[in-house]
Image (cartoon, rainbow, N blue to C red; front, side, top):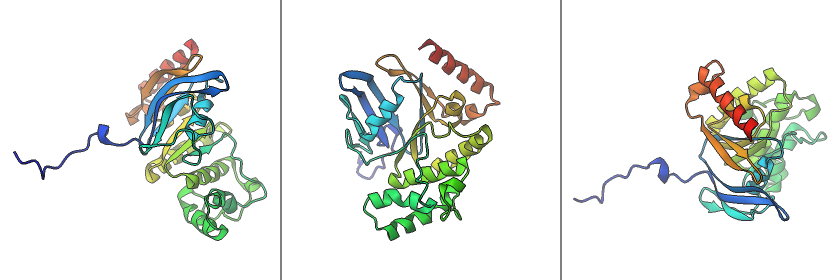
Amino acid sequence: MNTSNKQLIKTPYDIIPQLELKNITAGYEDKIVIENISLILQKGEIISLIGKSGIGKSTLLNAISGLIEPKEGKVYLMGKDITGTTGNVSYMLQKDLLLPFKTVLDNIAMPLIIKGKTKKEARELAKNSLAEFGLDGYEKKYPSSLSGGMKQRAALLRSYLFSKDVIMLDEPFSSLDYITKLKMYAWFTDMVSRLGISAIFITHDIQEALTLSDKIYLLYGKPAHIKFAMDMSDKSTKDPLNPKFAKNKKILLDMIEES
């Protein structure tokens, strides 16, 4: 049979992951903090990392970003080996780190200038993205005049302009009050969906992980490894009123308690 014109259907296994970790072992000097960690992040997906404080979640993000080089294993971005190299993914820390003496627009434009754009070009590109992040009209304001939620939006936009493929976030919403958090959750998931961003974030808030994530990874042990992965692709389980939400929350809390 002639199959030369036959169309091939792509399966999920044919799709190159946005980010892939293969057997990552990393630490500092002679101390191994995380060991043999593998995971896949697809385009438009949100992954959360949970576990006890000091378990190694930030070490894993440092290894992905190239701030430290893994002792073993590889990091791939769209199939390209980026192990131990910086400048490939965005990394937003817990604090927004906006410079108080710069306007919102100039804060946001900074990564573009670092990447070689002129100040004028960077400002123009940054200005064109303000509306997407709900910051239109705030470009001339200074961080001190922004609410906590608006500061986080500005910091996220700055991270997005540095790398539009993968954003890593270390407890980005922990400093916000409950009502602002809920608003940011809805905004963040919508933004990720619209812009096709892939995100990995650290959280100690189990409810936050259940609300935002497509997958949840629990780190356990010394050295830390992935003890458990929870698939959250069923969107109904993200609703706190769904009985499955409470069930999943108990599963994760019990596992953390046991670790």
